[in-house]
Picture 1 (tube, rainbow, N blue to C red):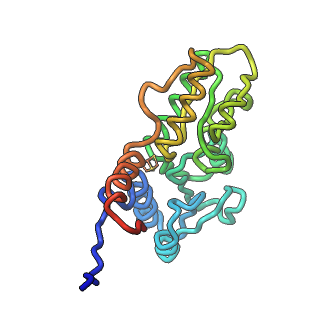
Picture 2 (cartoon, helix red, strand yellow; picture 1 turned 60 degrees about the vertical axis):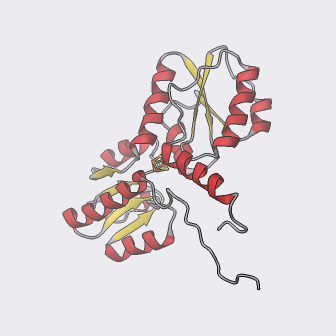
Length: 222
Ligand code: SF4
């Protein structure tokens, strides 16, 4: 007789990364310290249950500082990071702000800034309109960083000037897709400068590895 038991394998690691846990904790601690409400610019994590729980505790989520009605209340920037202009705007509004940007995203920001200072034109491999991409592009003056989203764009990419080129990536990309995009850029621009250390973060990489390892033993992967 056929075995009707359902065998469930749990992937590990799974669940929130350290950067997201840190950001959630920052919101919770801020509510305790400043009282409610505390504004959060952009959903701190793309997870409805967490966002609803924080709303119940006193967080108000907004997309832009302009939406904040009571600017005497503190605002928290999400783990995705923000363009340089945002903390400046908060200062101009005289607002208290707390930056919950994940340190691994900040690392990419500083990397981009240093490469720009060293005279490189930058390519950011990432997804248009993703908050992290908006934040990373917003670290540099307009026109000094271009977005490349996929292999096709990498094949068609035309440098805008005679500067040396370098690339950084969003932290949360598919490791395999990104490897192919990077290879195209390296073939086309053999002198392209690579990041000192992979920008896709360890949490993203580990989880993708875990999925690959476990999926081959499953009939259905959820
Ligand atoms: S960079 Fe990685 S560790 Fe940091 S918040 Fe994003 S996914 Fe999490």
